[in-house]
Each structure stands twice: as C-alpha cells, then as structure tokens.
Length: 271
Image 1 (cartoon, one colour):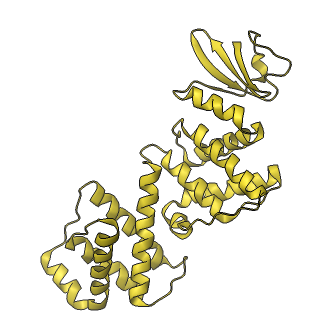
Image 2 (tube, rainbow, N blue to C red; image 1 turned 90 degrees about the horizontal axis):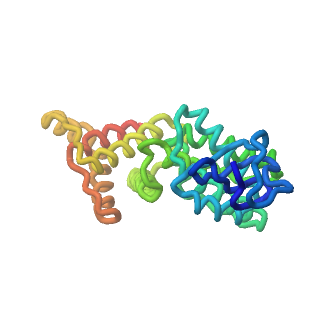
Image 3 (spheres, rainbow, N blue to C red; image 1 turned 60 degrees about the vertical axis):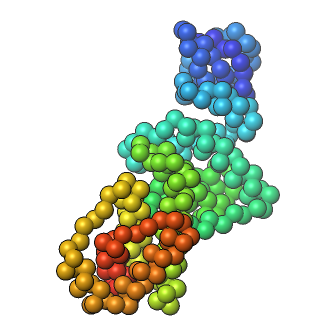
C-alpha cells in the first residue's frame, strides 16, 4: 500500500493494487510522506467505501480521537446486535459524536423529545447508546446526558439492515409520541415509563404505523369489533379521537379494524 494523501497522523489514503482505500491506525502517518509505503503492522482498519471522499473530508475536519471513539462504538454495536451496519455509519456517527462532544464542551445540552419512545421502541440500540456515553466519559472525561444515548440509538437503528431512513424513523417515533400524548390527555392520566401496559401500547402503535406504510391491515371480526365498542366505550372513543388527531396532524388514516386493537391496549392502560 502506497500513500497518496495524509489526512492526519492516524489516517491516510492509499493505493492498494488498483483500488483507493483509507487506512486508519495509531501513528500510521507518523514521519510519512506521499508515495511512502505504509507499515502494515500499524493499520487497524481499512475502508473501501462508495463514500471515500466524504470520509476523507471528515477525517481531515474532526479530531482523530473522535473518529476512533466512533469506530469503537460501531464495533461494540455490531457485536451486541450480531449484524453488520451500513457502511455510511462510519461517516454519520463520527460526525455526530464529534459535534455532540463539542456541544457539551460549550455547555450546549440538546433535549431529545423522543427519549421515552426511543427507550421502548429501540431498546437494544438505546442500551448501546448508554454504553457509548459511558465510554465517551471514560475516554474523554465528558459526561453526556441520557438524551445523547437516544440520538446515538437512532443512528444505529437506521444503519441496520432494513433499518430505514432516519427522517422516516424520527417521523414515525414522533407520531407515536403524539398518539401517546393524545391518549393520556384524553383519559387525563399519567403513566410510568416502566409500566408494561404503556410499553405494549407504544410497541403496538409502532407496528400499526409500519403496517399502514406497507398497506397491510389486520383484520378483525365484525362482531368482535362491535363487542369491543360496547364493552369498552371510553377506550374506543379515545381511540377514535386519536385517529382524528392523527389524520389532522400527520395525514395518516387509521382503519376501524386497527382502532379495535388500539382500544384493547388503551383499556389495559386505563386499568
């Protein structure tokens, strides 16, 4: 591998055969110049990506220790979940981690309005996010708020196979939050985030939205639906109001069959 460009002390662009790659390792560029041969023993990771140019720009722009931190978080995440993440995670997470640390240094703390929903909907990813902020504190002596664990969790989730677009994921999670707020507001109740009924309701609402996006419907017997309406009138009226607000705020239509299932979850929450 021959160096074509030095990005920083720990990252270089190299030519390996006919392919351009980015080699990363502690001190890989120390006392090196363009056209020098890379010491293979110093290379820790090699990237051959469609987005190599973006990665080059990032590595020349952010502190190299933040990139190394990000890579260690990615490695931990893939090991925990047993999946390979989309290669774009190497750029997007390093950029996010760098920006988040700089914000914290300046005393700027961003609140994650979807924190409670992310905890439940993306539990494994959130646990990884908690590990990440603990690791950042250990390595950088910077204490990140729990909100940051949720931001990291979203990035990890959307980079999983079939994880989806982050804007769509945030939109879906926001809709779930709005639906929960509508339900608790209508019933005039407060709920604990560790309440099993609350967690089941959030999970169910997420799957409802996914089914609607895929144009799939759960069928429910007509007689069963009528029985649910009569037996749980308060919860069904609540579900109906939630559907109206959902249509008004987010232009999402809930079929009546889905309202029957939502009613059952609302009734469980009431009790």
